[in-house]
Length: 503
Image (cartoon, rainbow, N blue to C red; front, side, top):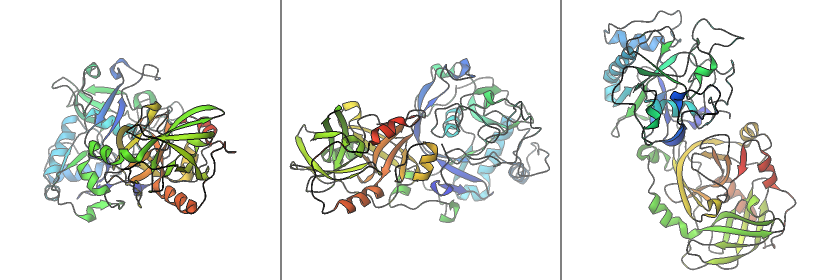
């Protein structure tokens, strides 16, 4: 998948000029499947992990120049790695050196004033950030190209690390997570730890002999640069391909000024959600459930199920076009079991995968869902409500990963030619969720859940609320047409996409 543009990320720049990107909470599959090429026993079993709290992670490995400034400023006795270029990653760094750097940086006056505290990432935090939503061997797919990272390959055997930022970032905006220099993590290493580690923000064992190193290096083959590969070494070992990157946490009462935040999108509620990192799911479900429907369809190709939501007092329902494209009749089922026939459609928009339907009646106590006027921001908590696999009114939650335009999606998913803006989320969706609302913390619709990517982890996509608003404006005043099979089949197009399926 192609990477989000920089303005999709929330950054801070500290007093040293180090740039760190916000990594939002989320869930991922940690470790390697037994079928992964190069998988080792230490990477098993592959298991689900939830990162409960967001954090800032260095966009780049700590450079020679940054290491020099902190350790000299603190009159440290640690080594100053030799290099002709201060933009090369600091190397010859032991775990002890890296943790000393974090302590010294945290104690610098400007960092104390901003209440920024630095440490090494845990092993789970490192792998979650490295994968950036991908379930493949690398953040860029199952193969690592010499155009993606500095590593040892038969066609190219580098003699040193590349300058930081030489290669493209992953989808979280992080550079050189594969190759370049090995990166120390804060945890103790245990080869069997995955068999008993916690699901929620796990930390390493309480003690051990070795510290974790991750990511491979310029000396390592691609198999050692995989997202799941893990190894360990003594805390005092220094090698010319050992380095690190820092993780930063912010005190909730942080006095970080607006000028510390670069390329941060604006939104009405997103920044507050980034701080709290939580949704009141039970409150949201109670608030919006009466206005969400399961859509049951019948047609020449048999029965189908999808989701939709009420947007006015007249009984207008929004859903995906592919939910009803083959329907000859349909009904809406509300959360309390109330069934209402769908009289027909006001408009069908195959190029946006949207349909505007009309109910024959509106049961009492149903309130239209408001549609948000703004794009969400990356890291914002969201919720989906729908009928996955027919299990009606199932809520799931996650975070916004990116906002992607039609051209970017078409490049990542060849054949997807829908002319919409996509909201990428980690919110789990499945067949039956199609057409259901993606909701922010205010109970506003920010998108229509549409596609899940089978080849990745937590790669789910919704048509944006701005596209919904445009569709509703075009359908305003139109008469109701009887349901009938449509000439354009979006379902077939979506099914044909490599690694994607209608949800």
